[in-house]
Length: 514
Image (cartoon, rainbow, N blue to C red; front, side, top):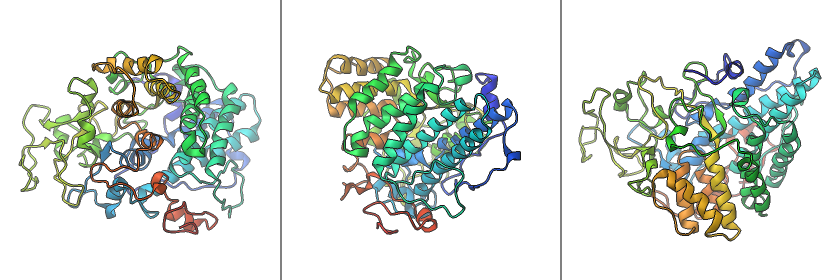
């Protein structure tokens, strides 16, 4: 596959983090407190290679092991049914969806260690670059600080009250206490504002797959848009300034075709503000076909590995798309065939499945578990699955996409009182591309639904539902939450047991705050 430029290859080759397998992988990183002079970088190539190590920490975000599941399975957009012995895993997939998650659940811990593993790498590299004191190190340090701020943005969103650790040279017994959510919010804002002038405004080329000025603005925009959730204070004017900085730059635009963002060779999409340049050989980790497809779907795409038959969308979410909406192809539904056209049979289909052995993905899911039908649920088909692919995709994965920024501006204007005007025009621009009729006015209901349709499976739904005050409502397989303490996750048990200074988030068992 043709990667964008040589320097992008230099950043990632040989520094690959393997893809997650199912849900039980431990992403915790061994942390060292000493770096000796012989471990410092001597050449520019070593600088660039070391910087790439900070980015390969992100590879696992394309799998089911952490943020993808925390943002999606906890929402109304997707679910992982327990199909007999498959995807039971102690019930934690069902608990994610019903908001009964516990401090022992592995995905809760994986999200934490994913973020702190990335922060640790950034801290180490900042320390090493700073110790060298050579020309050009300041730009690398600024980039690493912005990347570290992105990890802290995820932490403030997911866990709220987390320790701030920005030093690498710390004692071996270092055990930081929680900072408040406000303090973590302040850190993200301060770091991004301080490094922004040193970040490149170049787009594409050697800047592709790296945090640049506009990535920092996108993180700030999301931080400010959710500020009332994080701090109790709205920051809509600041959010508007950040999104306008991206929109008015002229560097990004809507792709003519929605699926230009999700095909195999999608690296030229004009919407990608920050993307992970996955490669099935050199940068593995994006394995959504394994996560969602039925075992028999291996024959549909001639995959080199058998899928795991897990993730599916909820019927109501799937049916929120009009039939004319081109984005309804986000889902794989109906009778399934091999690459050569034969009907695929599921010889393990349950006796009660009305479709019988012929493999058919149905919008209906008979139950969350433990005996969900093997064929139940429409599957996630948003990204193109290349014929003959390995379990790792070549498609790049956008973590910040221009259409999201456009929708964020529309939401800001809507929250400032616009139900028509520019806010409506921005949303209808996206609906026009999707092939559906324009809205005549914006309401909270139709805007949130439209945002869900556009951003399905792109790591935003949980945060969006919380911001709109809808996360605690009932939906399929999930009753209304008795308390909104579930709007942040518990501090994971392994973290509290290894650090007695951590205090559990309110409402959860375990730790001194339970």
